[in-house]
Image (tube, rainbow, N blue to C red; front, side, top):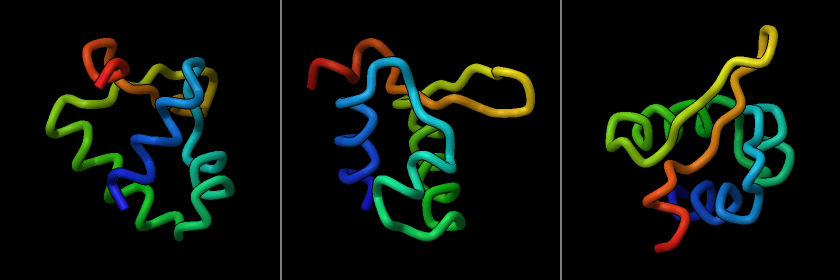
Length: 65
């Protein structure tokens, strides 16, 4: 499942919200949140706040792999 989220984020350079990741991946919201937490812990993703939303993207060094 982590690979699925990574693949989706690779295709979307501008980043995606959790809601968008849920819609595209067809995974549950809680599953997406758990995966993002793991990826953040492994320093593979980063997020920026836009208003109330967090927009997640891959860290630069992970976009190429």
